[in-house]
Each structure stands twice: as structure tokens, then as C-alpha cells.
Image 1: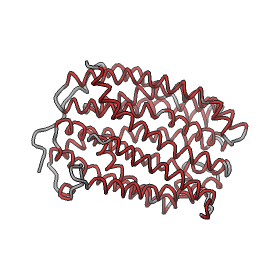
Image 2 (image 1 turned 180 degrees about the horizontal axis):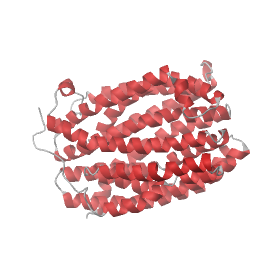
Image 3 (image 1 turned 90 degrees about the horizontal axis):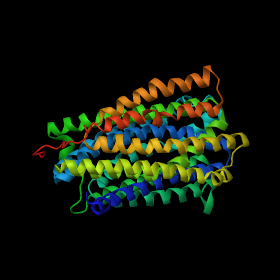
Image 4 (image 1 turned 90 degrees about the vertical axis):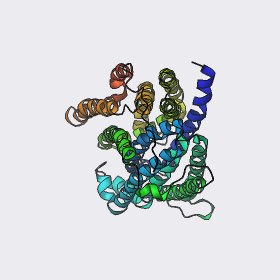
Length: 450
């Protein structure tokens, strides 16, 4: 394998996606930092309300993940028309899901918050946040369809630029609207919500305008209503397992937040900070998984199966190094994180050990993300991840977490360890499945045009 060629193709894909992931995590970090200056209840309520977006993001990642499988392979094959059909196939369900989430967040926010916490103060604060932020779900669903196509057609840098500018704007608007700077109204947590809506709207406009440039992949009306049946079948065949895998995994992770939400505001506040910091540090791992998936998918779609297999091996090995490095960075940042966190001494004690757990979890997460969501998906091997998460999360981790919290009455940190061990538990099975090489496949068809 030509290492120089491999890295020369991987880095232009991986680094913009990693940077995009970092910038998105910075929004959560800025929310947490700024709301921490308001009070701990604001951090906790927004952390719980943000679980709604986390669940919606499962739809985004599930559907874009499935679409990326076909988009990357057809782009490697050189079929622009098939990629534009995949674009249309992706936009419809994402816009529908965004509309449903927007409607629910606007109409029944108290009911939604009641699922995460029994605390009346947190429910009231979180419901106010959800009402204002509700429209962002629809906007985000549509814009992510455009960004997905950019990443899979050699324009990851443009997608990263749009996201990054949006993040900077969001952070600035956060400061203005949360604290009422420069004559803006002081809105607190509702200011953070409004900043999100404005940013999502502007990013969508930018994405749409960019797509109509000459030579770019664009949304064509004819493909919204007339698509080749074989491509539609392929789309849902490969997308549904990825979608349900993300849903099974994400709802399982959300159950961890539900469990902690019933163990007190100190546990919620510490967990919200730990998750934000973990996501910031994990950006390299996420970029490697997504970039590796596109690179391997391009090779498989072009019929270069041996090269795709070699590239996959290299990506998986790099993912282990990335996980170890990310965990080390997280541990090193612990003193800084604790000094900046405006939380109670009890919550600070929780946070110190939660960071240690997250650091260990990053190694398994990096490997499993690059392998399951990246390499396996690149070749259409999408069912294994679903089965793996059903077993590890819903047969092991979630039941043990519920028992530990509500039956055995274990301490908060012991419960936290249990609900964060899924990545390590499934690591051996992932390694065994990888070696079967069921993912080394060309999924494209000839003549996928209308």
C-alpha cells in the first residue's frame, strides 16, 4: 500500500470532519460554560432538554450514515446522477423527522422534560428552552442532507466551513442573548435556544445557495417524486439497519441520562460537563471514522476491493491510537476542567471520576466508531452494529444500570461506570466480526439513472 497516497486522501476527508465535530461540540461547551455563570439549575435543565436534540441527531446520523454508504460508493464509481437521487432519498425522511420533533418540542415540552426528571424547577426551565429551540430541528434536518452530500463528494472542507462559521456565530449570539450584551435582551437559557435557531436558519440558507453553483451536486425536483426502484430499495436496505442501530444505541445512552436525572442535580450537572468535554476531545476519533468510511467506500465502489480492504485495516489501527491519545488528553485536562466548572463540591467530586471513566471509554468508542460506523458501513455490512448494540446496551448495560440505581441503591459513580461500559463490552465481538471481511463489497449497480 502506498502510505503517502493513503494519508494524502484520508487527511483531507478526516481533518475537516474532525474540525466540524470540534466546532459543534464547542456550541455545547459554550452553552455549559455560559449557563454555568447563571446557575447550576440552568446547566442541568438545558443538559436534560438537549437530550431531545440528541435523540433527533440519531435520526440525522442514522439516515445520513445510510445515505453515505451509497453516495460514497457511487461517487467513487463516477455516477453523479445516482448521487443526486440518493440526496433526494435522504432529504424526505430527514425533513419529516425534523418536522415531527419541532412540533413535539413546541406543543408538549413539559411532557418531554418529565421523562428525564421529576424536579419541577428543571421541568419548567427545560420546557421554556424547548419551546424556543423547537424550529431548529426542522432546519437542521434539511441542512444536514446538504452537508452529507458535500462530505461524500469531495467537499468536506466546504461542509466544515459552513458548520464552523455557524458555530462561531452561535457562540457570539449565546453571549449576547444569554447575558443581554450590547443592548440585546437578557434571555438566559431561552437566549441560548434562540441563538441556535438563528444559526441553523443561516446555515441552511448557505447550504442551499452553495448547492446551486454550476457543477455541484444539487437537489432536483424530479428525483423527489420519481426514483429508480432498485436504488430506493438499496437505500432503505442499507439505511434502515444504520438508522435502527443509531436509535437503539442513542436511546440506550439517553437511558443513562434518565437514570442520572433521578439521582440528583449534582449528578446531572457533573454528567453534562463530562459529556461536553468528552465530545470535544473525541472529535479526532469521529473524524477518523467518518473520513475512513468515505475513503473505503470510494475504493469499494470503484471496484478496488483489495485496496479498500487495506485502507480499512489502516483506519482501524489508527483508531486505536486516536482513542489512546484522546483519553490521555482528557485526563491531562482534568485540573483545568475542574477549575472552570461552577458547580457544587459534591458535583465536582463526581466530575473528577466521571472524566476518568470517559477517558477509558474513548479507546473503545474510537475503535468501534471507526469499525462499525465507518468500515462496516462503507461496505454495506450494517446489521452487525444493530445486533451488537441490542445485546450490549439493552441486555446488559441498561438493565444493570436500572438495578444498580433503583434496586441495589449503588453510589452515583458506581452507577455511572455501569452505564458507560458498553463500548468496552462489545470490543471483542467487533474485532472478531471485522476479521470475517463481510464488509469488502461493491454495492453499486449499473445504469442508476432515470
